[in-house]
Image (tube, rainbow, N blue to C red; front, side, top):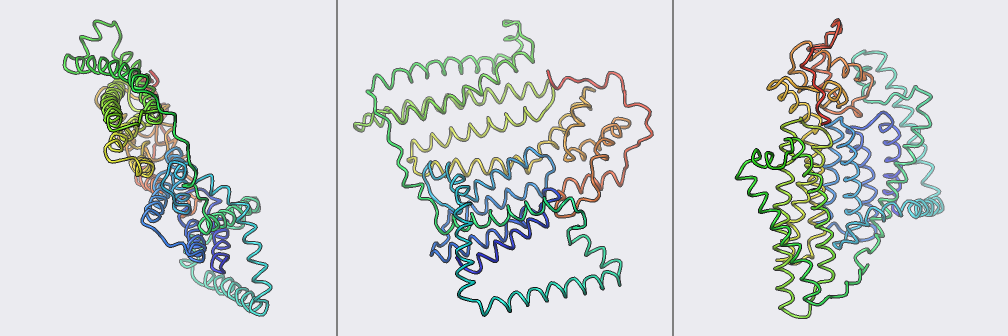
Length: 479
């Protein structure tokens, strides 16, 4: 362990203790920087140089940490932070197999205890070998801190503007109740940085994990079930194409279903079909006959046709959800499963490409697509899209769900600001009560700052006697 790694791990703990106790924002990026320095120093000492895919995973992880700095909604932020952790684990551990891609986060978690023991040994070695140098470093650090405190306090007392700037930059440490939380965040920062450094220095060789191939089946035993499934997919898709060109009204007349029932009944089943299809492809690929060129042609042909038909199923599911959203508005669940369906469709396309050019690159491609999807999901601000869609829908037909919109994050404020009074004030008054003016800059998202600006320019009218606007409120988003 290098001295740089030890100091960087300590810096990661201090930064975490100072900036992570108030909430999430750009502070996650600030805390990640010293941890990355600790990992870089450890990898360099272990003579592990950066590879192109290491850079890809590191950039993807840092990009995902931008989402908490921009968005306030908890659900896309959680997905982004979890994705950043997975990308960071891949950058530290490396690997190209499915085992490496899926198990890299477990390897990073498993390095917490070894990383702490590794740091303890490093501290003992340096204390024994640099006893004459450690004292001057500690004394110099103490004098520097003392000078910063004394002169910083004097300058703050001499100029109110400098005091305000210093107050915004330096975390508020006056609350005694924050002490235990800051100790916890300090420990998390140090342990996390040490685990990252330990993983970078000695990664788990997941690529050496060999998953035994499935027992190959005969052509008839393997192909017959898949051909039957292909015929079933083709029949379903033929009906979907007939509906697409013949119109939904004719189908609704024949089935007796309402518009919403037809859309709702089909989407969830088709989503399950997509998930089960991927399971079938995995099992089929492991048990495929592989005795000669004819078997390879058979496997590629059957699975290729089945994948193409599955893409039509994905398109049908997306179309049904689009119908449902047009009729009853957009919600978090609906936009989430719609994004999931798009990603599953992309995975099917990647599987088809792997059947043509080989599957060696497939694990990394799926991981990159997942990271890109989570990043796009966070950057597009789902709560803002939900509010925008439902405000537009209200403008068109006078239907809106006030209770649902009040539960969205402050990402929705710019869209809700377009509503006419008294609807606007009825909704935005709830958001004004949630905004905390005392939240420091590093724990405040861009959406929260934008919401504060909007409400400062056009405050919500709190003198309204009632938010009941008659039939214009229609709680139909849960249909």
